[in-house]
Image 1 (cartoon, helix red, strand yellow):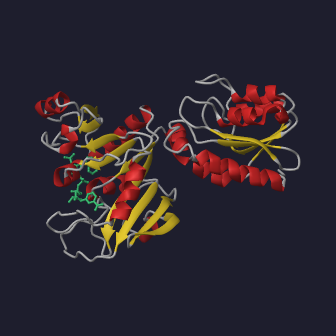
Image 2 (cartoon, helix red, strand yellow; image 1 turned 45 degrees about the vertical axis):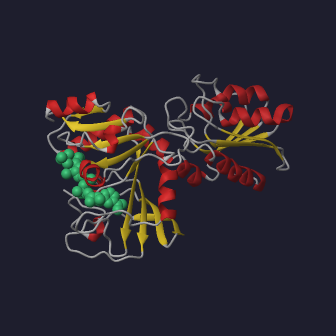
Image 3 (cartoon, helix red, strand yellow; image 1 turned 30 degrees about the vertical axis):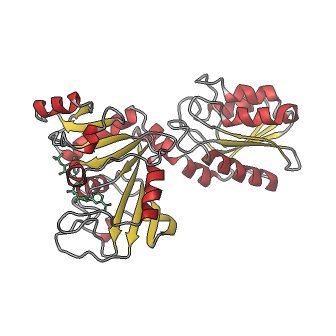
Length: 374
Ligand SMILES: NC(=O)c1ccc[n+]([C@@H]2O[C@H](COP(=O)([O-])OP(=O)(O)OC[C@H]3O[C@@H](n4cnc5c(N)ncnc54)[C@H](OP(=O)(O)O)[C@@H]3O)[C@@H](O)[C@H]2O)c1
């Protein structure tokens, strides 16, 4: 593999462009593309702007126009070779007379998966894969989770005091974090497909779980609630006809309560499984089947514990506020069973540490680790 400095710069730009699609393109991947001349001059650029719209390659090629003939295309993800909502990108590349294609990372979905690259190579186009691959893979990690594991990318978020409490011993949690931190959470809510909580948080906090102001997408609000205990007079149920609410219950949830939630406009999905953890797994697969790419989990301790125990948390956003709440009975962010040995703890690769109105945000990725402890 060898790449020119111009290609490296163009690919960095393609990745920046791709990110503009965040919240708009899912369940498609974010993709950016740049057409360059041999001396590295940019001839055209593009990115996938919204689900169903033109792909990045097509946009970059049309921006370059006739100058694309004989040029190099740098694209952050392998071009597709199938007819989906738009014609195959491979055909557009061939028709434009591109001489060389540099791809950052392969596309694991069945309509590409090496075939996009193979098709271009078969047409005599020089194709190289792997420039800025790690960045491109990270950029598309939620998409990859959905394609390869059939479940959404799970983002755990909590706000805690310096002594690690998410509520007082009396259950009060408003507001632990600063206004600036809460603004960030609203922006995050506005670009995910689902926002999930455990039923006790719904009962204790009566949250609305909407993005204010709204973002590019409206998340379905998901409550994990084995026995359909979600209060009918709460804000989630009251607004279920405006913003969808999905209550995921056990098969043996009391039918009268299930009906009451349905009558109020909630969707109720009955998960198979005798144990909560089994049902959690079923719930995530169901969300994947519905093609939810990113799900934000806003607590509480029980649900986050269940997710960490099952190793199903992919990304963590922890807001730490300089207050001490104390109290042996006060809630901490993550409950569940936890691990016995430190070596088995979820390791976070920190991607960001930032300050927001006095709070510290630590954001990172859960390192893929060993399977759950027996
Ligand atoms: N500061 C913050 O960031 C923050 C955020 C959220 C919550 N909180 C606080 O946390 C407290 C609530 O925490 P919590 O631990 O009691 O409640 P929780 O996690 O909201 O709810 C736990 C309940 O969810 C249900 N559940 C369904 N599937 C589950 C699974 N696989 N694993 C675990 N639970 C599952 C269970 O009830 P069923 O078996 O009946 O379904 C369980 O009892 C509140 O006081 C709230 O204010 C603080």
